[in-house]
Image (tube, rainbow, N blue to C red):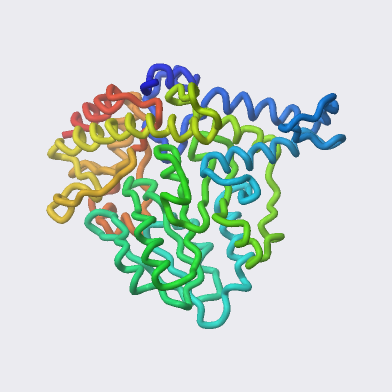
Length: 403
């Protein structure tokens, strides 16, 4: 079945309030099935269900245990299907900073004298601050200041036998630039046995996930960025990786009530394109559905970049300008732009006055180095699976009115 955006919009009751939401990067809309699942989970998490009379192949209940235990198990299974692995490789946590802190602590036996960790200035500052606490030499990969791209070639110079961990994002959450994680991982493998940790949170709402596609060792995922509950996960490539770290440190407390919404979130994405016929598993439905959604979103992304990019007063960060003119980069449907001579606060106010919800860009070190501060700030737009070409046209007309 082809992607039907009208049907998808019907899955979000919040869209009936009159706003045009273009802030999926900051506050994704929550599907109705997810909010209903979380409400139900909070009601029932502490109750003990009656024993099932027959124990079939899908039996998962432990007699006398709260229903919330099953929600946690279901959440791990859902994340496993999202990535294409078995549930025992999934570690849940309340958010990514907490999981990154636990991972750094669990990997402490690997960080000995004269070891190194490779970070980059594309990663979220909140995660970099945690990773800089490791007891190892820090080495930094740098993004291209014209495009925001993180070149893979530099990892051949940064990585050696002393390297234990390389952290990269799958995509920049505001610029939309997709990182060549597979190429980076291949260069790492040539020089080291270090683990590659990829934050796929910004990438996951738009493309299918897999270890084969990234070539990574650990995939980090913030379920909230999918429009799900405030829960995060680390997914490990192989069970044997747990033998090298202190796994007990990774056992973080997670709300069973919130966990009950993770499976509904994954089911939502598995049904975006009506995938079902001929698909025997949730993973198969996810790959098919996300493939259809990705094709639709890529077309919408092209409209977004084309319509805004043709306005002479608009500067799209990492796209406009001579240095970036001939760059051909893969991008997710997000961008950050400024209007010449107009502060970002004024742009944001004009958008809100016209019923459009976007956000002012965070002034990270990378964006400051790319000149966002000098042009008076910028506004970030992030598309969701429910957005249409009409939304892009409304955005473009509103921005054009500032000329």
